[in-house]
Length: 95
Ligand SMILES: [Zn+2]
Image (tube, rainbow, N blue to C red; front, side):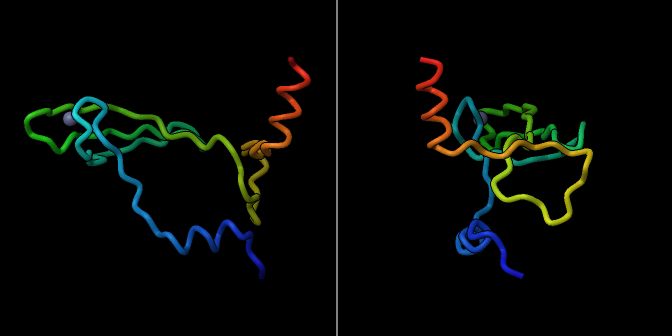
């Protein structure tokens, strides 16, 4: 099966998603998460800088599809990403 070119690009640069504290910009650790809907999760972060100590909740939401699923769930609607050309045309049409 041929996968979308985005899959190959992702495999080449396996990176860990890391979050920084909004106050001191030190790295934070995800401590727990709750799946609130099939496309929205809340994650509790703790700043790793002992001098800061900030603990917060962040939202993680599926907002755009870049490559469609080969196993689509009819209950899930994640819109396709708009292309730059479509964005440009839309901006021109609305003035
Ligand atoms: Zn901090």
